[in-house]
Length: 162
Image 1 (cartoon, one colour):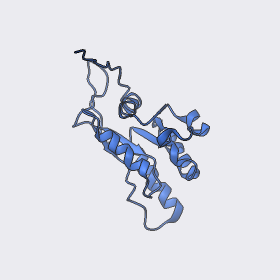
Image 2 (cartoon, rainbow, N blue to C red; image 1 turned 90 degrees about the vertical axis):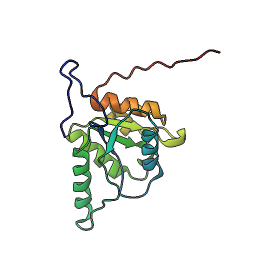
Image 3 (cartoon, rainbow, N blue to C red; image 1 turned 135 degrees about the horizontal axis):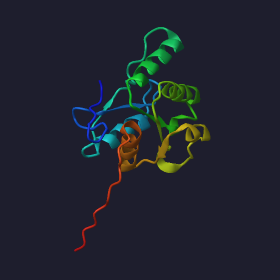
């Protein structure tokens, strides 16, 4: 899929017909943070994305190399990779592999802090990420837009006074 580029703006326009292709790091196992990311993305109005990762598509044979190949295939389809920093302690090798694959395929990395703020983002992730954000729907969506499509995401909050 080739993103639509507005000749006047020179930028890709995110729309329902041209969603941002997102990959979220995973290890083919159930993880609350993995599912939580999509809950946050779904709660954002006028944000269109497609999850190109498939945590349920674990290769049936081929061992570790087949898993790496499947992850690489999924990452190549993305425009941006969301790194779940909370998974790093238990899955250091797999998260590192996915960051390596993203960098090798020139995909930007958005690190998502561990949920609940109980630990810091590992320095290995913080140094490699193009951007690091906390668990806030607006911050996550804005980081994805900036990194995937280089969109200006300045928004103003409107405060109604009685």
